Length: 466
Ligand code: NAI
Image 1 (cartoon, rainbow, N blue to C red):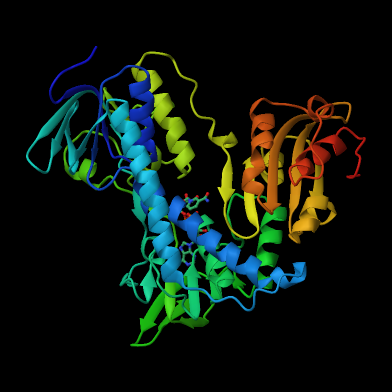
Image 2 (image 1 turned 90 degrees about the vertical axis):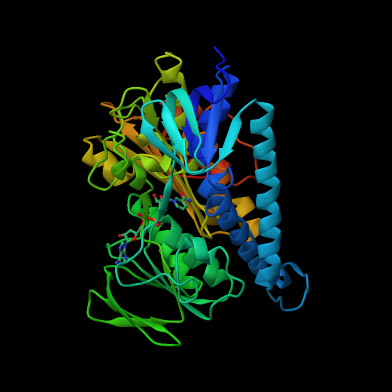
């Protein structure tokens, strides 16, 4: 049914990946949809997150490639980096994608209200320009913002969050990154490849919590090799600042000084208006909206998706949750998102990509496992590229006869692994076994054959991997 005026089948609050995916998917299914977005559609991912970060990481990769071009017989002279040119290019890329997305939404008949919306009551979103929009169903997708450290005021010059790093016009000589999660590791890698002297501080004993330790070991080694000082078990507990620098006090009693500090200690949900507005939507103790597997909130007729809920804060998880919410609204009994088997891609150099159980988590869950690894050092394409740091690790369930059964997890670190995860993702999610994969032909020489080789080795008869 198409409702007229300011009344829609679905009103989506927030136009980031969770929100615009809900709008596009809902409109494809014939629903009338409105999106309320105070800035530009595309959200954090397009304007202040994934896309700009990957664009600047590409600049860093190219700078590194040109620096190493002599090894291939190409003498381009010592390269210099003008970050402001890269920023202009980044803006152009974002603008093109934003125009594409806006046009796509328009062509699907989606109405976008540029305003700040608040859920006043189920089915009613009030706008800060005085208007209101009604929806039979409302999807909350307001996203998240960077967390900050008490006392360490973000000034955009000496103390930055991801929002400000992505706008840098010059590479800082010395930088300290606080937090060794995905954002911290990506920025440490980016700044180091651009010539900054970086210290990476992580409160926990390892970088990238939740990542397989073999992968973390390779990444830590690679970061150190490019000059990053990686310090784990090092929580920032205090700070002092003067005109030229910031001194951070660490939990181990030491301190570090930097001219730029990047705070990457997680993101908090933007649920403040829900908490204060009497919407009735239940939040957990950290401010995330509480949802059931179909993304329904505690209020009938209201769903929530993306960074607003306590699930992996990844754009593609937002897409998946948006589709579950829309299918639930349509009464289609959707399959909930399997959060244990979503793909993870971290765009450090070398890159990290994984899906499913780590070896430790599989054992913790009670699985008897068989594991095989194929280091990129033996891969022809990686040798040709001169990018041999890395490994592919496949974890399979061990059957009663000792043979490898279902593939439980695949963990990769190395060149372009974010583009290689596809077949591993399908294998884990379709519960394939190494025997299922063994007859499949892998193109040679490719980086992606490392996954096939590793899976083949799990059948007990490998070619290159023993
Ligand atoms: P995070 O929660 O993944 O990592 C933050 C890290 O900071 C943790 O390891 C924590 O132990 C550490 N930390 C907290 N307080 C500290 C202190 N005082 N001193 C030292 N270390 C401290 O958060 P992050 O990296 O900011 O990312 C936010 C979200 O965005 C995450 O869910 C992340 O997975 C997601 N994201 C994913 C990307 C990707 O997959 N490529 C890229 C960017 C973000």
